[in-house]
Image (cartoon, rainbow, N blue to C red; front, side):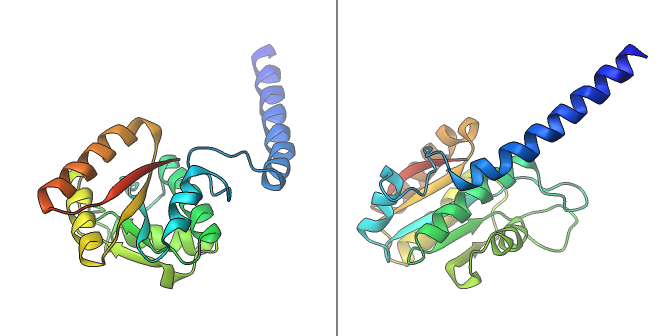
Length: 185
């Protein structure tokens, strides 16, 4: 009986803290590495040359029935904030195989970003990759072809080091002079 009462109290306190905390956070966002704050290093990087600086959002393995994993939700939240704060910078949404589902990770992310207010014309899909190395190789090719000078890479902290290394290696192999910066989700 005590365990049930404790579980109910914890559930109620958790629900109340989420309800109370969510509006306060929406009104006063805390700047972070992935921040879209106008004076953040990432914002300044994007504003230096909007037509040649891109936002690259890396995909994550979708659930069996298309459910979005928490890490991808975090990436889309950061990407949407950046895109909405920088409407003249394009975004490459990268991710391919979703196992047996008929759409790519990039297409799933399109829907998630549209729901967050990002216009579809701001997004470009890279839907052929099945790994971070493939994300980097395909995306660097696209960036080079579009005349880009750099990009913010939006991914989670545990994945950022490997992702940046893969993107820099792909740029070197393709002879692309691109600057990559992290935007942590």
